[in-house]
Image (cartoon, rainbow, N blue to C red):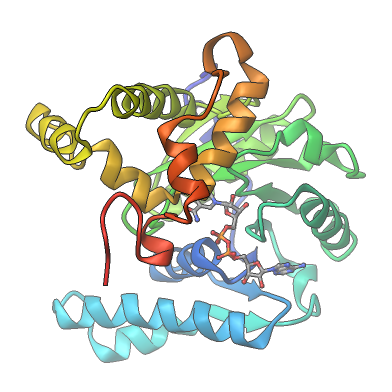
Length: 294
Ligand code: NAD
């Protein structure tokens, strides 16, 4: 962390209209959060049913607020109008900031980012919600890499306060400032970090998962470890957290970290987490991980 996020905000251009690419788990959550805090957002996907799922998720989250008497049904209806679903780039000319949240595949992200760059204004800030792909790598094909940075939300977006704003080598202060300001307007806590494998949070989290995996390999009971870590004061233990993150996602992210920091992160042989993944125990996404889900 070089400069405090608050140092950038003084220079921020207003972010009045935003867009999210991808209406999946993260895209839907980002659209809800933006709409809920009053910043209009276009939600673009390539599939009608994906848009429907994203909208359904946003409606569900707003409905919960109504149930808890935090919103009236009229307020909910009004906030929902802040999300405009679309399958085209038609209205992207007026967008101040875009969050790319399509599948975690560098080729797809390259194609989507170059495509959207051609549809937005010269000053539009482009950001990516990638968890593992280098921001410098994604900036390579862009005409205006200075307008690009990472904007890494955590899942579930509406509950997790932190957003990592990731500065690439060519990212301008103005791009960081706008992204920090948008994160703040969404009610989040932004931190500014340099580009590196794992950014900041995963550099802390994955060595912890590695330690947990090592304990499993030595015969520890995962439920016992979870209980111990809860008593230690953490909201959930490592096995449960891995189920939330997804064992496939964890294995992939660990590979990226091992490539970036081989001395500290690479291990010989299979880890307990890899064995879980290879046995199709992916966590909550397929209802079976360390724990079984209905
Ligand atoms: P997801 O599979 O739920 O959603 C991806 C969506 O992108 C799908 O709806 C798909 O139709 C859409 N899509 C694919 N190509 C597209 C295109 N060309 N244009 C527009 N939409 C397109 O994925 P997700 O879990 O929401 O992850 C999205 C991104 O967020 C990934 O980069 C991932 O690494 C990152 N991320 C995920 C999590 C998590 O826990 N799920 C956490 C932090 C960051």
